[in-house]
Each structure stands twice: as C-alpha cells, then as structure tokens.
Image 1 (tube, rainbow, N blue to C red):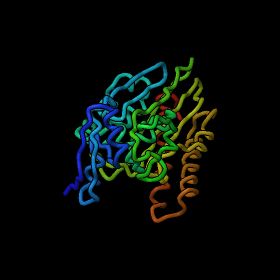
Image 2: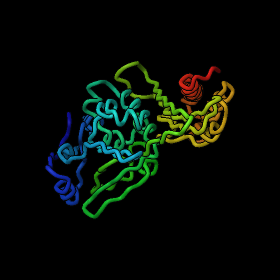
Image 3: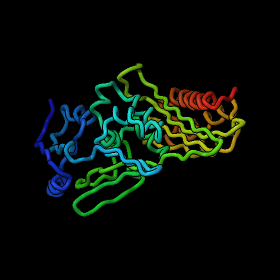
Image 4: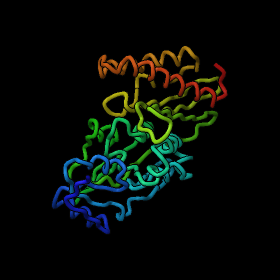
Length: 290
C-alpha cells in the first residue's frame, strides 16, 4: 500500500517554491524510484513537478543544460545529447525497460542518489553540476559534492533541483573520442545495475590516449570518478598490459575505500574485467589492434 499524506500539483515554479517554503514536501515526477519506496513506507506529502517547465534541453556551445523532468527516453534519443553527450545517451538507453525510460526522469535518478543510478557515472565524466532553487535564491554545485552518501544529497527541504549542467568535449584536430557504458546485473533486461562503468577517452594517431575519464557505479558508496586510473591512462599508448594495469589499479582503489568485504572476491575481478572490456572497446573504435 502507498501512504500519501497529501498531494499538490502546482502550475508554476513560483507556486511550487511557495508550497515548499511552508512545509516539507517530497517532489515527484516520474515516480519510478519514489513509488516503490513508498510501499509500506512512511507516509509522505507529495508535490508534483511535471507542470513547472523543467523539461527542456538547452545547448549553448559546448554547455548542455538539462531540465530534471526530462525523461530517460528523451535523453537517449535526442540528437543534441547523442552528439554532445554520447555517454549519457548510452547510459539512459540502458535504464530499466522502455516503460521505465518513458516515465523516469533525470532529476529523479539524481536526487534518489542510489549507488546503482545509471546516469550518475556518465554525468560525472561530463563535469556535471546541479542547480537548486528555493524562495530564498539559487545555488549551483558540482554533482560529486551534491550526492553525499547512498540515498542522501545536499538538497535542502525547501529546494528543488532546477537543472543539470554538463560540459561537452570539444573536437580536437586529429583526435577521436570514444565512449563505453557497461552495466552488470542479474539479468539482461529490466535490470538494476550491480555494477556499472562509464568510460570516455580521446585518442590520437598511433593509439595514444590523450585523456580518459572513468567513473563507476555500485563500486564505491557513491558513484565516483577514478582519478588515479585516469592519470595512469593519460598520455599512454594503448596496450593489453596498460589495460590490465588499469583494471588492477581500479580494484586497489575499491579495497582502499571499502576494505575487504564479503562481496570483494566477486567485485574485484568483475571491476577489473569491466575496465579491460571498456578500454578494449575504445581501442577497437580507434582502429588499434592490441
């Protein structure tokens, strides 16, 4: 049973912020994360955000601003996202089922802050920032600072997530950018990630990695970039040995942050394998034979 204390459906952002300033309300858009949590959970007072005009995708040069009510399906299929943020397009296309993608939203995936959220690793690779609004003003912060802990963010009770801002990569002469999003779960469809990996790499002639960005979900307490792995890869010539070293380093980072746990014997070789698979995909896209 779903316990609802009250339901509000404001017609404007100003009306919504007025309501949220007076009492604690839980924002709801697609509800694909929230509704399952409310079954047999604590009663909540809901505020519907679908009529607030927060469903736009705006492009200004290499800056892409995404409204939190934009659905995963739209992000997966929109040409601007495919061209400028292809890793995000791939990640949203891997979420759940067609029905979930048609209903679920970018904002919900972020604010829910699940370690297995598919969009977070991809967004981190694009230096994503979130914009929050309330009656008292607006603030902007890095996504990596916004997600504090599993299912916990820095959003205040009177704030709404109003947009997500990403920085696309500019085209570099003689370079090629490849992306790879991998997720592992119990089944092949309608699947919650047990582990995910988002990799973006720009390569040059001769198989040199100009720079790489590597993020993981369900590996650490929250999705995060593996900066040490990126530094290992940057400026190096692609090879099987390099990819194996990157995979090994990733497992060392896992153990350093979470310690040796009951799941470590499973997670360590799987993470290593995902790193090597993703880098091998980049090599193939670059026409490099290992």
